[in-house]
Image (cartoon, rainbow, N blue to C red; front, side):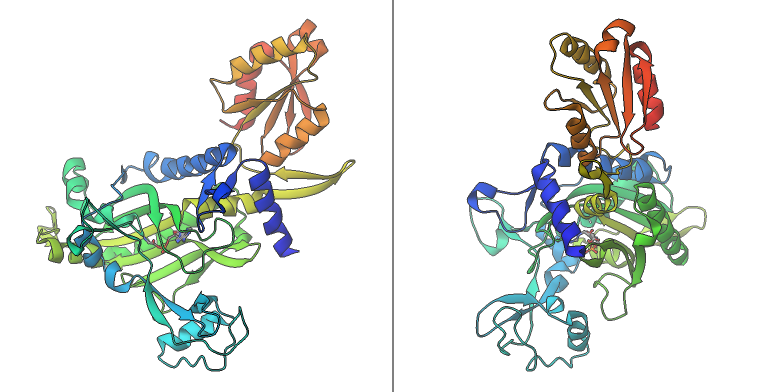
Length: 451
Ligand code: GAP
């Protein structure tokens, strides 16, 4: 049953133009995805909601859009060249490769490996069943490329595996140009790339994805307090996006499983149809990144506190959520089915601010007297809301089509509208209907959408 919901969401996403496999006519491109006309709206709304909360509504956070390609020394300083690895296990019989923690009882195996007590001799290969798994080797997840025409070690560039590093590298530029005093944050949304060994579960784990990250720079002694505060602030944000509190939980990282930069870390997990999994990480990164960049670049990245007359390297609390994974969690939380007289009504109960279309305009039929008025009504709505128009098929089926993609409101133009210049607003969730004068339509829609 659980698997079933995942399949239904994946199929809906494909059928209705939310998400397609990238390069599908060539057989796909290895865990990369294209967001179609509805998906691009939904994901952009998720990103806009994050930006609004994290930057627009706060006086202590500013934004950045850093370049993806950075100086290669950045990734040596950040520790990614040395440490950004997953343990890769290869079957000596069928040659299939697995991430150690993706094998059956993977968490136990990973813990044994970290404790240097791993024995794979009794573990069967999930592909061929033979007990011929070789000991793990470290596999670096960064994609390597070359800048310029010569492919040598001097021209190596890495596709960033996290957006955070440009925030650290630009820390001084931003602090000086904005004159921000500690504590303050820098937020960024952008692409990240990881050569995942076992991508999967639709858009949950892919090789190219977007992150929404924020680094909060503080005095060292304040960092533990901000770490706790940001955990709660971020959880509350997900609730505002329509994810029920009971479908989320924190999972603190044990000492031996944290990323190389973190002194404390917790995942916000969501109850995906395939199990509890991380979709946001909150990390206490100490002064690790700024200190390493100071060492590697030779540039002193200390902050001067003119009140305390002190110089020190700020500590950082990071919040990092995948835009794709958050979008997936929101889709899962919004997906609903209810019985109706035609069988089953599928409804995406998306919050209005996230819905790809806020309003759909539907003439009762394709009748040549109705269509001009319906189009005129749509032209009034379009500048105010992302909206759509549909005149094909019976009206009941068109309502269902809009329910399935999460459109909160439909506006129906019927024959009476021609005489009384009124239209019907139909709500997705309650399916209730009210009549409104066309002249008052935009404010009435605005009020219903809470926009
Ligand atoms: N800067 C910290 C950092 O990158 P992370 O826990 O490795 O931390 C943060 O990643 C978030 O990025 C994850 O919670 C997830 O939402 C998203 N993410 C990471 N790898 C991903 C992948 N392969 N596909 C999709 N999203 C991914």
